[in-house]
Every structure is written in C-alpha cells, then in structure tokens.
Image (cartoon, rainbow over all chains, first blue to last red; front, side):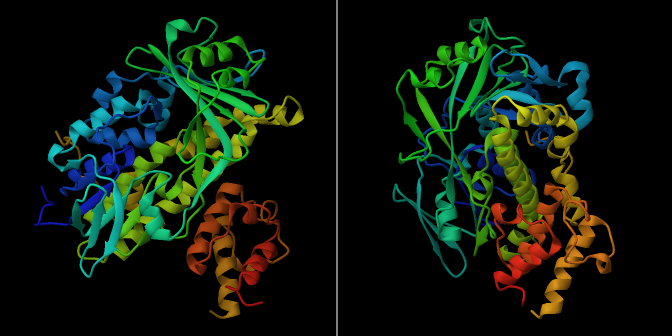
Length: 412
Length: 83
C-alpha cells in the first residue's frame, strides 16, 4: 500500500459519509487520499438519511446522482402534524410541481445509509480504503504526523483529517478535551415496510408529528418508497450513563413513550420492534478545528442535533470545501489552509447547529399558546430555512478566490 | 490590544452586519430592535468576534445579550477588551 509519494499524503480517519465524500472530493481534484476505518467492513447500521440540495449538487458533479436516485425516495411534501389528532398544521411541497428542485437546484432524497455508503465507496479507489484500522495515537513529527492504529499498523501523512464522528478520537488530539455533550434527548428509530403502516396518512411525505416533550419524524426510502424510516425523539434520559451512544431498553419502552399519540405513530414504533435508545450528542462549539497538520470535519467538528436533517449534509459541504482548499494550497502551511477552511465553514455550521437546538424545544411544546405560535412559524419553513438548502459550496469557494471544481464529466 | 481598537472592532462588526455607519452604533442600542439583527445574523457577528478576539462566546451567553453594551461588557469581563 502506501500513500502516493509524488504528492500530498492525506490520511482520512473514518469512512463514514464525511470521510468518503472527502476521499471523492480530493480524487476529483487529483489528490489520492487514504481512508482508514475502524470497522472491519463497511456496514452502516440500520438507519437512513435525508440528502438535501446543498450536498446533492456536489454528488451530481461527480456523476453519482443517478445511482443515488435509483435507491432514493423524493418526499411528496414536508408536513407538520398534531401528535394526537393527526391534523395537518403546515405543509410545503417538495416533489409536487418539482417545487424543491426548482427552488434549490438539486433534489431531496430519502436514502438508506448503506445504499449511500455503497455508492460512495464504489466510486473511491478501493486500494486506498483501509478497513479494520482503529486510530489509537497521533504523533507530531517534524515533517509529518505518525498515525498508530490498534492493529499495529503505522502510517505517516502530511495532512490528517478526522472524519470520525461526534465521539471523535482525532478531536480529542486537536482540542485536548472531550467536547461531546449529551443533549438530554434520545431517539428510537426504525425502518418499517410502508405496506405495514395502515394508519399512516401521506406515507411518502416527510412528516413531523409534534407533541409534548417528544416528536416523531419519518420519511420514505428506497427506489419506490417501499420503506419508511422514522426517528422518534424523547426528552429522556436526563443523563446518559452508558459508555456508547446506544443502549438496549425494555421492549415496552419505545411504544410506552408515545402512549396516547395518533395510531400512525404508535403503529410505526410498534412495527419496528427495536428496543434500542440512541443518545443524541452534540459537540460544544469550538474555536479551532485544527492543530499542527491535523484538522476535523463533519460531526467531529460540529456534531449537531438532527432536526434540520443537516448532520451528514454539512459534513459533505465540509468535505468538498476542504478538498478544494487543500488542492488550492500551493505550498501554504497546513495551518493557513485549515484557517481558510474554518473561516469558510465555522459560521455556517454553527448557525445550523444552533438553529437545530432551538428547533428541538419548538418540536416538543405542549398544546397551548406557545405551540400555536410555533405552528405559525413552521408554516414559514421554506422562507425561514431556504438558506440551509440553497447553499452552494463551489460558489462560496469562488467568493474566497479558490478555484472551482473541474467541471464535470465525473470521476468514473 | 488597546481599548479603543477593541471597541471599534465590535462596533464595526455590528454595523457591517446591520448595514449602518459604525459611528451610529451606541452601547444603549438593542441588538434585535435598533440594529434589527436576527439571531442567525447575530451568530455571524459572534463567530467573527470570536475569531478576532480568540475567545469562545457560548450560545447561552450571547443569546442573552440585549444591547450592544451587553456584548461589550461580556468581552470586558472575559479580559479581551479593556474595561
């Protein structure tokens, strides 16, 4: 193996969506990076993701969108509903009339994470994806960083990128602290065949069911909307005492947490039969995302609550921005390249992170005047949150004088 | 960093976000009312000031600032702006 000697040696820690996207984005710019993943195989756990225009426009340039589309469902509408009576509080078209794609220049996809990861890894040079490599130590050397892995492997790189998630090991090396914070909220999640959801109105819409101290979000995935992915958030436990981010819970707990809700909600949670609680962690806003030759991106840098569906999407934006700036560096020090990266990305991701935090409490209001005000607000979602979806990473790069991506016959 | 320079940095950043002349910014002005900055625009100001002063301003701090003076006082207490 070995990283190419003739050029910048970039080591990416983590083959999640951010890490693989960075590998592809660098490939597009003529830099072959190496990706190190702790898992022995690329098997994304059972969960889905919503890709929005701000990230899909990057994949489109790489030629990946047709394959993604074949495994995705475009939501019919975005609908907000009352937790108990199921009434439609607000709705915005997505696929209807091609509204979303016309407005934001790229589509919106519900897709299984495994399908996304498969598309990304298939487009990446397989000889440079290294599985079963869990990073245990980084050592600063005069002209490189030495990477030590649990399996005894040692590598050297000019640039190391931590794309290792909200509980990032690389971040600990960068900041010297564990900056992950448990949000006081956790989620039950599952994927259910659409045909089993008899009580569910508009099964192919993306829908928020909003109630006291909890909400449920769902959207369809697969090429024909054959499954529904849901994410049901509760304001418990107050403290997270388990070592990892998930914990098994009593089999009755998921349904019991939504007792009294609309049958569509309880039926969905019941059908998933998944007694696992997922802690929602965020990352405390950080002043610096880099140290020496090491930088972090995605959840490692700005882990956020998922209520705008932007965790993965902002990681993808980060990846394409960082790739462009590394390719544009022309002998600059890593420090100055990383400073440009952070200057481009920190305000945007902090805003989305903050907004998702505020949204969390808005989604959990009891019926009453505050909920009424919130309902007026969600009717304005397209106006209020268009800025998230209309973002164009390449345009932002051009504004700071960075060369645009080689336009686009794709990488394969 | 001398006091005047630092306070100038604050008013310049706020004025630029609000689209007004820095000379018009006074400590008594309210951020949401007089300067008409919504929370997302204010957060851009905060991130810019964090970069200038090398100091993190947590969300639960800046979201409580009502006036320009509250922001300046916070930076004074943190010791990055002379009082």
